[in-house]
Image (cartoon, rainbow, N blue to C red; front, side, top):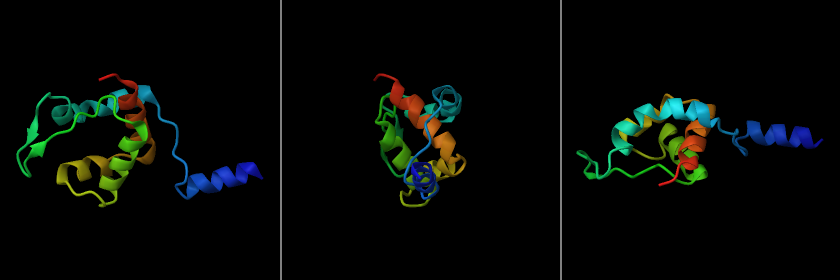
Length: 101
């Protein structure tokens, strides 16, 4: 019975897959172009690009899912997030959150 409840929650989006840090490390190469440059600012709209190294894992998952589903608006981030599967989002979040600032 518990297995059915957990499976149902996973299908409904209630639980996220565990992230694979090794795969996340491979996937973040595109993130580093903006997020890996200290003091980097976006030209349009103009704002500082946040550092994501050491960020809370669930925050990264939530942010990427919001970009993926249009709840957060930024063309570059939306394109990046839409190119990732749910597992890849979990992998990226696991890797980035494991790093120290």
